[in-house]
Length: 92
Image 1 (cartoon, rainbow, N blue to C red):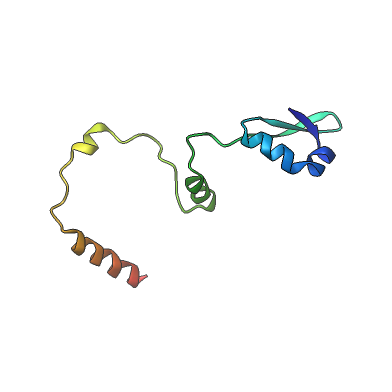
Image 2 (image 1 turned 45 degrees about the vertical axis):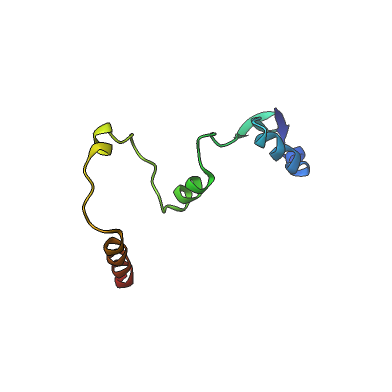
């Protein structure tokens, strides 16, 4: 779908509904396309996207190898681990 700046401004809600439905909106200025509004990828979690945008999280560069999931876990108890994390956070 194509639109100009004035029409986008006047009918923004309608165009955002179209984007939510999967439509891409090309925005033109004096008949020349210069921007596109596209829906976020379906596999992207909104919370993850917000964390990445704020700089609090980075996306993985590659998947973890299968051997990672076969590694033995530490024998530490959950309570001991939680206490250690709490103490570490208090030090900051």
